[in-house]
Image 1 (cartoon, rainbow, N blue to C red):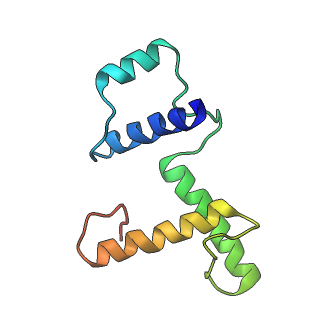
Image 2 (image 1 turned 135 degrees about the horizontal axis):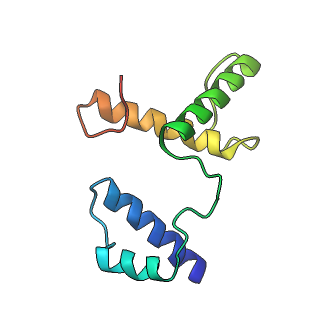
Length: 105
């Protein structure tokens, strides 16, 4: 479907920006830019450090309410938080193994 293809284009651009193998090329970027393609569909979408700090704040609230940081991956009240915590755990594991990771000290 068109929606899945659009999502894939955004994902491929993210991979390209991270230096990972991607099917996205400068030619494709130029073509999509020519169509005024919206790379970030949510106008107020947080990215990078701002998004990390938002999720960190949500995790602190979760800990205050629940007494721990054991957020389930599919946490019904906040699916984004559950996914974020899972990602943080994975990134820390990579870092501890000496592998490429987005986690910092």
